[in-house]
Length: 258
Image (cartoon, rainbow, N blue to C red; front, side):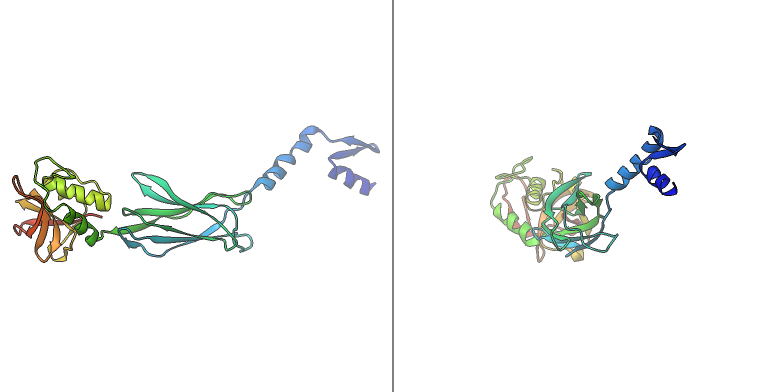
């Protein structure tokens, strides 16, 4: 009888006065949700992420490598998709994606146009839960030669007040056009406002491709692009053309537009 009782209970039945009677639906139902939850639970992997560099020149790439491991047994995760995302204009934007393979890792190469945070996001699979990796800041260093090469293309273009290219420019319209073409950054169409954009750089540390804003007191009245050795490219005034010439004074600020 003891053996029969054990079997009956395991089958959701009860032994009453020597007869097998079905257990109440309420008592049988209490087991089902727990078993279903256990069956559907997914393992949350752990990730090891590395970056080939955290400072990259404009136009160059950074390689992001992410490896996913099952914490339950230490083995690699071999299924699922990984997306590389960049934080742009207040939201995360997917840039590239790649599937995991036998190695449990992906290597995604990406050429950011602007400085900002990157992260790897695992989409999950039938067995593993999704996972968002930590964010890492990658700086994009302006390529001075690229900026200067674009600036040179417009030598000879006539000055026109209020113009911002591609064939006529005023001073701030010229710098605005060149930096947008080469760095993707949109500067305001006013020299005084441009002195607040980008990163402040000491005069002694200026490099070719840096933005130069000349000032009267603290007011920015003229903008140009540093060409090295005390020269700049600019669109000077009515009747003049874009050219390379000596810098016009010592009261100026330097901004690095990345």
